[in-house]
Image 1 (spheres, rainbow, N blue to C red):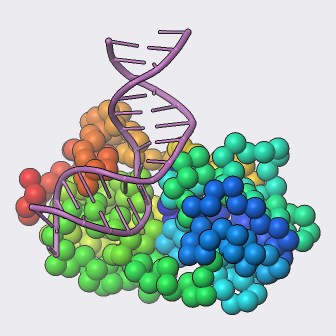
Image 2: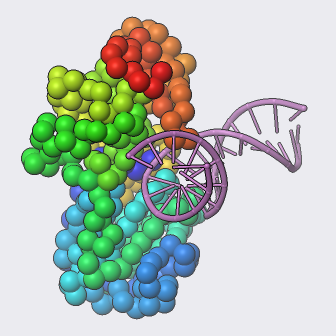
Length: 276
DNA sequence: CTTGGGACCTGGCTGC
DNA sequence: TGCAGCCAGGTCCCAA
């Protein structure tokens, strides 16, 4: 599932082939993919515009256009962007052809992905919490974002309005790296534990970006290559397998209807569990 | 404030 | 072998 490292990789690898290119033709094969304009107006509005830059905010990709508008994309569960794919990808939802012949394809088997053409990117991203890899995301900022929140830490880490970019699998990896139980409430952490969570957020995400993301499911890089971050996973997607540290079988519980994997020995509930 | 559930969506897996 | 039914989880929305 595309989370921050996958979206960051997609942005980085799209940029050299897309920046400075002008849209010649836009074809939508799935009209409910786009908002707020109806599909025909979306295509017309994009045609003739040049991509000035691509940025990432949380799990969103922001294409800044020559008109000052933004083309915004969210890959949700199974979306992927492909550059000049060979043949016809089976789940093509949108196809963008640039003036120089470069082709960009939005592929999405489950059709949960979304695209917007808007004047103001803020209208889409304004509810997102801070970027966890930016220099202003300090330990103090994390402490403040988690304070007075009586929700499980796992739920807090994956709440896009508290911190942006972390999803289910990296949330599990971060908690294992910090050796903290996913059910500990966000407001129960000691200063030392918050420090550990902060370090883990940055190291897990940075390492995953260095590995070009995790190809556990449908995620592929724009050139079609797989990411390799999932080879580093210690708990995510590893229910029943031995913990790489202590060999205890990895457990899986449900939080907010989402599976959460952790090591019951390395991530013991020590103090102030409150939820157990 | 919090939790839980449903909705969206479909390929791939399970079990009969 | 075939097919119904479940599962995956990012995001939003609603009820309690």
